[in-house]
Amino acid sequence: MKEYKVVELKLGFRNRVQNFEDLLNQYAREGWNLKEVPSGWNSVVFERDKNR
Image (cartoon, rainbow, N blue to C red; front, side, top):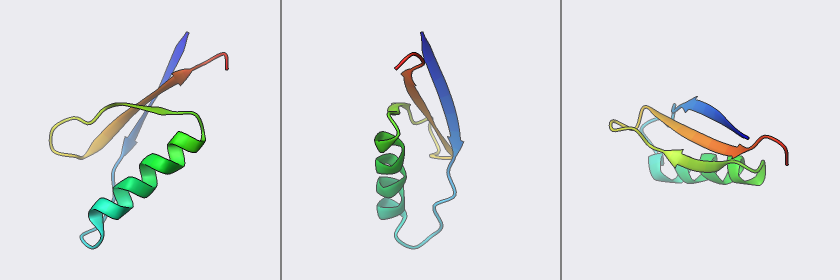
């Protein structure tokens, strides 16, 4: 079974790409995989196995 997490992005204006990379790496360390980045970059959807 999968579980999902939707995260609203608050990256600021400076270092936007670096902040996004840091966010992705943080969730990857917790076992989350990036599932989708909806258009507009206002949120991202992560997925992971619930019984891990």
